[in-house]
Image (cartoon, rainbow, N blue to C red; front, side, top):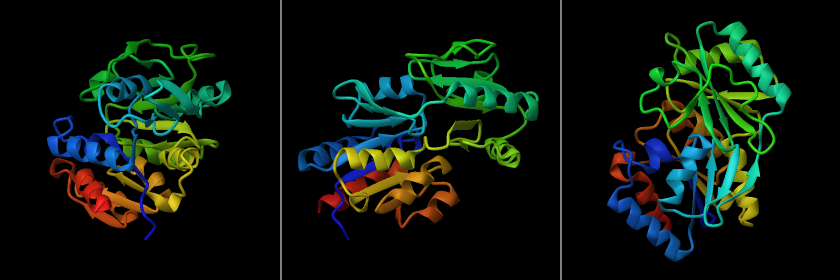
Length: 265
């Protein structure tokens, strides 16, 4: 097997414990990886601002893909390296689809610099991130603050049910996925963790065969399919386990740390 040079890991449910922090064992493994020249990239579905705030205070420093890969930051330089955002037309298409096909749904808009949620959205999502509230989301994104992801929650429909509705409508040029059962995440079709891993590997001049990816939810599957070594933690969704070639211990049993140690041996 090609020696792994880059590990791309999801954040919540994978790198972080169920309590939401980095364990001592994982912190040590990340430090060991850095010392050995093994690069670690975080790829998360978290909104851009929230993910960046976390990353700037936590290891590993380097590449951060947020909003399901729509934006890639260099946290050392604190600048955007790559983004894949909505056009105004595509954004209006999503809003129109949601209004037409999901009555009772509430929307959120994740842009390069803020997260704005319609009233009631946060009540449907436990542990919701810091955000602004606005009934009308049209006009919140624009030049210098482009839209990267639309969120959709519903008081009665789960994320998988909302995803089925989205697929049934065959909305072109867009991709729907989810990282929790509470809401659907809609992005431009090429904004996904798989494309962010492909871009990061090329940026670092690393072949994809020399990358590993670790995930737990369906939004992680594109990066598992791109990686040379696809892995899932024991607490992963069944579809993610099916896409993996390696099953690791759970996030609470330091699965990513176990992988790093194995790669450094």
